[in-house]
Image 1: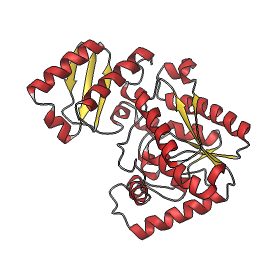
Image 2: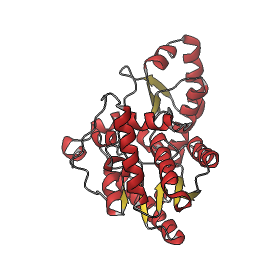
Image 3: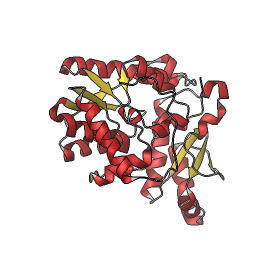
Image 4: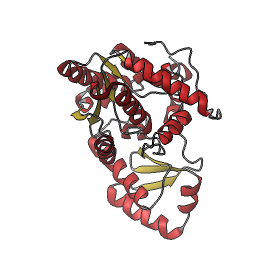
Length: 292
């Protein structure tokens, strides 16, 4: 299995070639079958759902999906993972992760994801050992390589591999293949843990994470999507895509949002004029940090 991904480059925006994508899936199945048994770190998103499904297709009951339950993940995310596994028949367990007990994680430095992934990997390794599973994998794809991802190093050090990267699968291809397979999550919006809404250096607390989760859940309940609520102390900075951004200019809706956000605990509510862009908080990092 490949563990050095330095030579892979994201191919965002590249048109999908159905035959090429299907050939990559066939290669993925072959690679997974060689593992004999596998544990998949399953968040509930499209990438890990696709990987879990293909692993189940390749290995049957010898493929186990494992979801981490933690304050850093929205409750909705865990519920979606449980529902997907039950619907598809994929063997699945939910475990509690313990990153919230780690001072080096709670400090929220640029290496927070490294410490989080290391802690999760230890939990996954325990499950794998208990179940007699020889290999652990996660759902990173080639598009992920364009952003700062210190968790990759932790995953590699802990023995997790990334089969989607090894078969050169990007996000668009994964969505295409997931749709071809009839997976309900094929168009699920990309997400990241709630900690990604905090600026580096802002200590991580359960209270902050709950504020973010409540605020984003409220906006989604209003039919808004493609958004993030960034927590800047007393201020909530809302990033939203074009359609949601336009809808939020409606005065009545703005007043509802302000009232709800203040009830959650925010004093000031701001709209980011640039809109929603993944990984925007990483701009605060130096080039040396991001590409180290």
